[in-house]
Length: 431
Image 1 (spheres, rainbow, N blue to C red):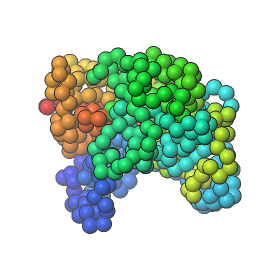
Image 2: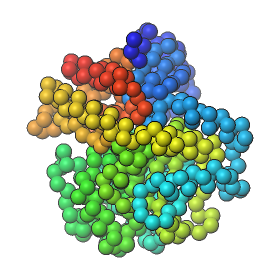
Image 3: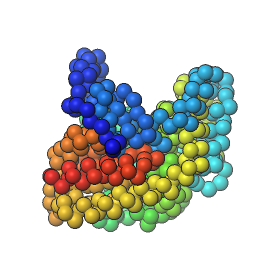
Image 4: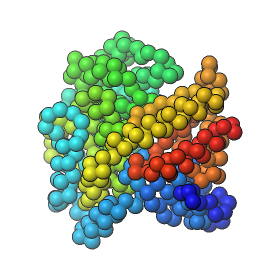
């Protein structure tokens, strides 16, 4: 018996009922990709309110790297919640915040002494990284990239490179934000020189920070070439610019290292992280060079729920699992299997234009014509819907909505991975 167990129609009657209730009570701006309601989850599977069990290749959008309901994380949350659920670190400190900060300083990429600010989300982490960079440089400008996603706050939206649905109708946006093409070599070939591209846009000496995802997340799992990242690091060094690596989706083992920067040879000044840091609890962080983080004076950073003790306890337990169980090397092995199978599938399925990724952060880009690379967005939605009917939850991505990304838990079993990939292969073979 496989992990997938479909016992009735999808969506089932309870999910349909909850969808009707949702329509009456929940803001329509909150979209849901799959029309099912989850009742429980374990490891790499989720079970809906109608008793259907799905393999989860979404991980709550990259949050569940250690798997759903990981026993060590559940125990840490329960133990901490029984002692104290909230104190607000700006009112009175607690050891969990300090202990997690020490751990993040130890494992985060980047040379030299580091310090940490904890928050609740990835978007908050990006916002505060920009604040730190501006405080350090006394400059206003921020350079970001096309196809990027950095959150749904005002500045996060401004930095994000996709209009619909994230930015449409929400302007005016934050000022002093400048954008260059991301090195999306499948579509655009070699990137242009950074200095030349900025010539008519902004003086580098007016830039406080460059914010980049080493691997695009929402933008479609495009891996930045190491040569480009080296050029970017050199550019920042020449002009005294803070280099911020947004590792919200890439971090914590997904790319085959604890952080993608390690895999790609990038030495960032600040790193933003969230998602899989705390095993499903809401937590974000900015980790970076102490000399830069120290630029913000007392009271300049904070938040009522920032670094909540329960979330910190969950993160400490989660990181312990990554290190004890050698999760990053496991991600590398899983990613190699996915990549090999998708390359083989590409040989017989013309719809697959590109297979790419780093570690277990793998994706396929679907196109109607391999020569023109016309995005197959409608076909991508159909693949996701048909996979769901077969018991596999998938996520689309990309600026054109034509990328299928794989975000299964890194603790997934070999048999579960094969079962899920077999669904992908069957569905795409019928397109």
